[in-house]
Image (cartoon, rainbow, N blue to C red; front, top):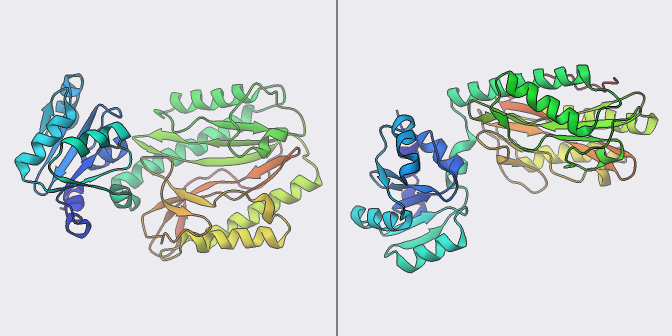
Length: 354
């Protein structure tokens, strides 16, 4: 069976390189199953080999988590990269855009090889998930769905946004999540019109819309789920907007299939919301891929040419926002299948009034 390292090496000829320096921790984990903190080492892949370059702090850990990959233990990481490239006879090194300017400048000054900055080389390999990855994402999305339902059982006026977010994070970690993939968003009342409004000390009040946006890691892979609920009747205007977003999301999800582009999916939802008077209130993209990171390919939004393929996992998250009044976003995770899609998150999508 072709390994992930071999899949990367197979791309070298088309990229006109003969080596690749992996600095992104997520890409390191994807290729060899483990990583170090940013700046604490690199995975260097040459045409016929790979070596993980880091220091003694990680030596025992990597011997356990990555026993078969050769390792160079040193504090002079970049010099070790230079030495390994020379030993391999490499002439053109591809680098990721996660390298810092200081790292690039050192390589540019010292390496005899040419350097080619490349974007999304490994990220593109990561888009289509294998069975083990899909199993982990299924566990993450199932647990996150359970956690949000549990939060809705206790969410009430008088709690603060921060208390609600912390309650959910504790519940998730108590039930098997290793941690959130971003700061849990709980935004209520007029603050629900802030798409990325972090949880604050604002007290939840009767009549508030409350947007809960969260993602949690299980076995290294993340979920991403958003629900907007109401603490009592939110009024006819916001209720109508909720139903419009719900219908737009249903239409987008119905169009998810292999071969659809990110732009085509965005048009489906954006046109529906525009036709119903909400176009200017839809101020962000329609979705994105998830996996080792909370945001990865494919991208779903205006102008994105990304073409969906089977076994990719994406979000679909239309939303509308009204300054001074509130906002609505509904987000679910979908697996692209051979013939369409499968929903992975299971919290009801109808307007929940608590």
